[in-house]
Amino acid sequence: MKTLQLTVKNILFAEISYVEHGRNPDIFTQSFVERTATENQYTNGKVKAVDEFKQLLTEEFTKSFPDLYNYENSIDADINSNN
Image (cartoon, rainbow, N blue to C red; front, side, top):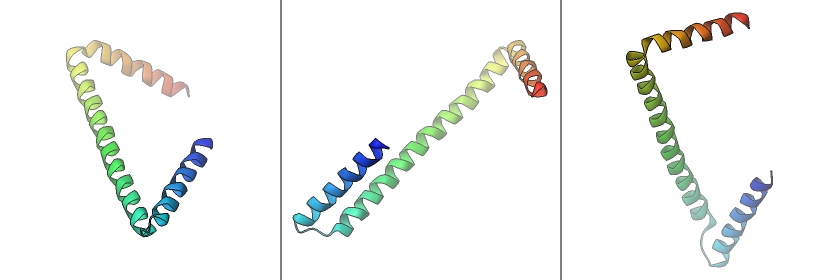
């Protein structure tokens, strides 16, 4: 909660500073939203890349160590059946 409060204070300070320098606060808001959307797309790309790598790694481990993979699946099945 404290981080959120600090972020809100920083945003408000930046926007007030923007207005004090004779700039339009709507432009500040627009650039902030665009920057946030860009960072969100970047983060989503990283998450997707990690997920794809995890899937590829699982496939390769399954090919290289089929006995280990089958053993893990049997453990998972036992755990799921007990719940």
